[in-house]
Image (tube, rainbow, N blue to C red; front, side, top):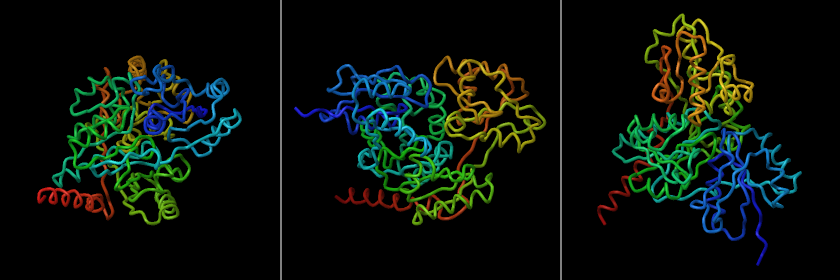
Length: 451
């Protein structure tokens, strides 16, 4: 019998599991000896369960902290390390490659051709060059276009399976009650709740072949709602990529966001209403240099506040989307922009009042200033976030997260909630670029009626 290639998959509870499912599960040529985990708190120490791992792994596969990678390579005589997570600078990817090489293993990146699943229904993907660019509001706008055309649409969200993986194989979210049913983290609720409130069914989980099969049963078109800056798990008929003029040049400096830029049929320059003109020009130049045939749409991300009068002249605690300002490397977000625009007297620095793991987040992400990332990957961390809010001396809490945190925790202070949607300001707009998919679906329906 030929010697099996020993593999470790480096990940963050998302792309890593997908790569395993589509390429390594039931593959007799490989032995996956471990997963390693990064980016997300407390996701190491688990096991990828036998129920998902398949017949070759009756005991499942252990998940270790990425810090143990070198020791694992040497202990198991590993041949290949498969890098399988996103939103990381190109230079940092190669630093990890150097660590793997020094330990004696090959460093591998699986590309789209090996990992994208093909669907029986049209797929539109919404991806980005960095996290926090505006994928979710773009997905909602894309869904709105198809719904107005009379089509059934379902969004499939990039995975965030941070709990019991055996209960997250294939999840369907049709109502807000489903968020409690599936014991969702704050990050999951941030992504799912706005879609649900807009009347969009969302699927997510671990096994994206099963998810695609189920979603396709109730959809004329499936929208891939990307996570971080990863590329799609499904082969798209139209690929949409968002870029951020608040982070000019990031579109060509991060993995695999640059891949999304180069693969895109449509590139949306979001947040042009709040970005500097010179930054918008720099992003446009990089699009032209890297994907000159893409259709380019400029879009605003206008912010509305449920009670704007409560901000003027007040000391504000600005709570921002966690991933956007942690590994997304933004030092501010919508809450800060809105608070300054509406005349807040001060953006209060929460760092001196941070509790437990929230304090650890500030220690890890040194670029953060007077903003509070909405971290809530466990009940304990949600409690520590709640305590941090309570301890911070402010007049009003400005919630800049996609989900209303008041539904998740007790905030005794006066609080306001922001909302933001995509608003195209140039042509072609999304209705125009998606018209080919609408016509294709309707033509298929007419053909089936005739037959």
